[in-house]
Length: 117
Image 1 (cartoon, rainbow, N blue to C red):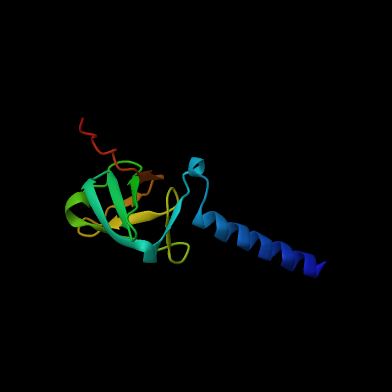
Image 2 (image 1 turned 135 degrees about the vertical axis):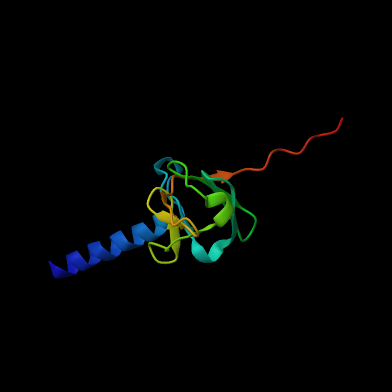
């Protein structure tokens, strides 16, 4: 019985790790590995763009307006360790100390290049 419990725990852990790497987009709980984030930009007080090493960009639409985000930047604590997860984490604005919740992550796709005729 104990071996079965250990095996089930290991299987659940492996499934969680696999899901964190490539979770279903419909759940909104996409997690980004912190070490893969190159930089972030904040076009407004509702949006954070996570620029990844390798060129991908992920957009996070916060749950509401986060006062001061655009001008002051933010900090977060990676939870689970080394990840930032949509719909699961909060951020704190540096100067205002506003606490805001992350919304879902969506991958930003580049607009197709114009084809001159």
